[in-house]
Amino acid sequence: MPASPSTARAINDRLALRLLQQEGPLTAGQLKQLTGLSRPTVADLVDRLTASGLITVVGESGEQRRGPNARLYGIVADRAHLAALDVRTEGVLVLVSDLVGRVRAEASAPIGGDTGTGPAVEQAVAAVESALKEAGADRLHTVGIGAPGLIDPATGDLRDSAGLPAWHRSLAAALQDRLPGARVTVENETNLAALAEQREGAARDRDTFVLLWLGHGVGAAVVLDGTLRRGASGGTGEIGFLPVPGTSGLPSATDCDGGFHSLTGAAAVVALAGECGLPTPATSDGPGAAEAVRAAVAEVASAGAVRAAVAEVASAGAVRAGVAEVASAGAVRAGVAEVASAGAEREAAAAGAASGDRPAVRFLRALADRIAVGAASVVAVLDPGCVVLGGEVGQAGGAVLAELVRERLGRMSPLVTEVRASSLGGTAVLRGALLTARERAQDDLFTPPER
Image 1 (tube, rainbow, N blue to C red):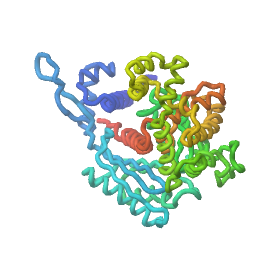
Image 2 (image 1 turned 180 degrees about the vertical axis):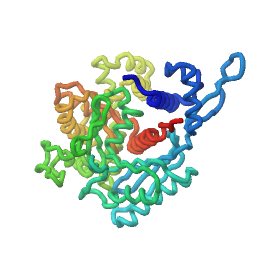
Image 3 (image 1 turned 90 degrees about the horizontal axis):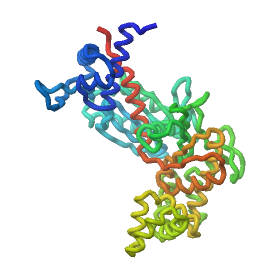
Image 4 (image 1 turned 90 degrees about the vertical axis):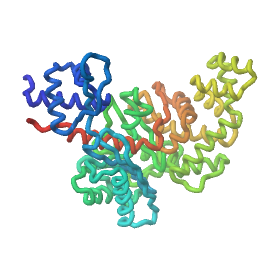
């Protein structure tokens, strides 16, 4: 059955708006070319979208042709403002953007662990209101919140969890009360990070992948055939509860001690650094674990492991030409940089780590072994072809840790799997929350009223 005229108009309008979102301002002629619609149909939709306040003339094309230049049409970015929140155990980060995703303001609110629920919520809401004021906006259309913990698929609410501050569960309702008319949604932080990596980060070329979140806690997000999978109860990716070897017991329904969390959570990473003879950071949270990993990676890179790695890889023929060239110039240090720029840094760093026995080397190898244990279980069940290491620890480990995990995983699993470091790092949750808020706002606003 052919679409009705009103349905056809709605489809054409959404198509044009999506193109303006992706490509930026376009002329009517460019819209005609990109949509394949007729000139009268494009003229009609441009008039309709302009009258509804969704697009406006933002300039001229500047094309060299006879007659006046063609008008450039763009989305009215200030038609709506959006907020994205990254809610953490120690505070909240906030972004406010316009409808096309341009960030207009940022704010943060550190919240101590001994802060009561009421004061903590007030500090978080005040940070949102401060960012909104700085952005020069008077209201928010949509608020996207990324938070640790399970989201109830029936209600969209953050579930109760003994390991998370109580103010997390009260924040969405408080924002709804203080921001009349705003649409407030909550999503698991790891899921949002995966969406951001899929759209803008390390997994842009992958329809199927798993993001392994390594921070204060551990988790995973599963994207299959381009779709984020949440599971029947919203618990897909609760890998911290995964029973694994190397722990003192088994996890329970209410406590992930004894699960994968006991091997790779922040406290376990900091403890492992101490066991390997490295200085331990002052805190055992996500930033503390990242500090330990970052220091170890820097030590491996600066203490000669890369030079040894280049020699080892060169003997296998991987970078022979690069090493020979720099050796003839007598510049090993410059050569390492040159070889790294040619794409061999990960192989060099991993080989150096595998061949040494310094505390930093032992630590990174042991950490990679632990991460690979959980990753192997995920790979055996899902065969995603790609695992992205995110969270504070994944970001700190970068390409060095990713390569060590890939090598260890390759010896544990017959399924070929790439292991990549997050390219968005600490901004992934905020970017995912902003992308989600923008899509929901556009779904609402990109349906012009019929005339």
